[in-house]
Amino acid sequence: MVENFGFQVLATDGLARRGEISMPRGTIRTPAFMPVGTGGTVKAMYMDQVRALGSDIILGNTYHLMLRPGAERVARLGGLHHFARWPHPILTDSGGFQVMSLAKLRKLDERGVTFRSHIDGSPYEMTPERSIEIQGLLDSDIQMQLDECTALPAKPSEIERAMELSLRWAERCKTAFGDQPGKAMFGIVQGGDIAALRIASAKALRQMDLKGYAIGGLAVGEPQPVMLDMLDITCPELPADKPRYLMGVGTPDDILKSVARGVDMFDCVMPTRAGRHGLAYTRRGKINLRNARHADDPRPLDEESDCPASRDYSRAYLHHLVRSQEALAAMLLTWNNLAYYQSLMQQIRDAIEAGNFAERAALITAGWARGDL
Ligand SMILES: CCCSCc1cc(N)cc2c(=O)[nH]c(N)nc12
Image (tube, rainbow, N blue to C red; front, side, top):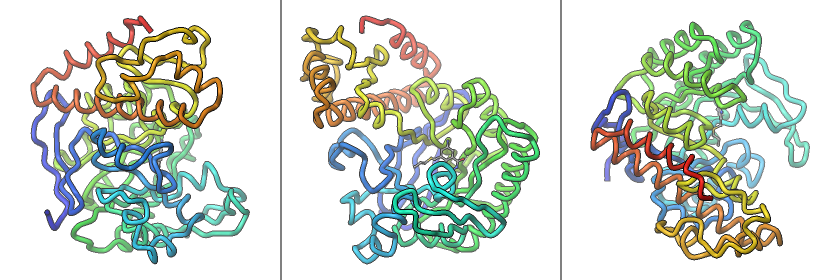
């Protein structure tokens, strides 16, 4: 078991990187997809299943867990890993993004943000210091700085103000985090869709010599080309020997195109949320099991998959479960979707090692268009 946090680039293919993050609770193979476990659970999944699919790390959420069951309560009960029975690495978001998207009566200023819980309306304050304190109480392995993410489109002056505030909050988070050898605090690059602000944010964070860097402020409604342009601008400004995490991304296509630009870590609610809404990700594209055309289809989602949910159940049965709003629908489709995402990540890691990432990405993309759904 390693004592500290380490990142190694094992192979490159163009700008794509195959790496490993070493932490006391385990090794994270990159490029990595991190299933979202917002409230201490990857919805509709057992943690053993999440692990068996090849997940090396999951996400937790400061905002949700501070509201319910409470960070101090999780700490009293042994920390998030013990609470949720996930002994491997956990990355926690800092809470600012969720406050701005979920909480009520939000007031943001230099100090932090005050808000009322979307659950029961009780008042809270989130500061950089409190965010790091909560992530420490959760015993999070990779902690994110508190930041302000600007929804796009936005006025340049707004984007600049939020980016500069986020830099000051990064300094405060770094101070509050201190020196925790087996853990890491990542900075978050902001700057919206403005190249100069992205570069300024990345350069300033690089000066802070952090253990990893997230690219935030994307996957907030901008077209994919804009997101990719911002990656082309931002990644070269970040240290080559530190992990790069693109927050909230994305579809399988987003992931392929972002790996090709040097991104190492991803998280997205899509595979789990889609599973709860009757949607299946497969190597032949997305299938909406609510659609009546599946009512008599005896085929599984993917006869070649190792995942029982993909291989052993007919589309007709899955259609029936979805239409009947059975709990098993969400369970099987979430299982299938995470299995697909993790198999995609394994193909990506293998292709970078083999030096044929571009060819493999083209084949995967062609598979989605092959139809035969
Ligand atoms: C559990 C969810 C993690 S990712 C949430 C997220 C998603 C997206 N798209 C952007 C941001 C961002 O800019 N900052 C922060 N802290 N989080 C973001």
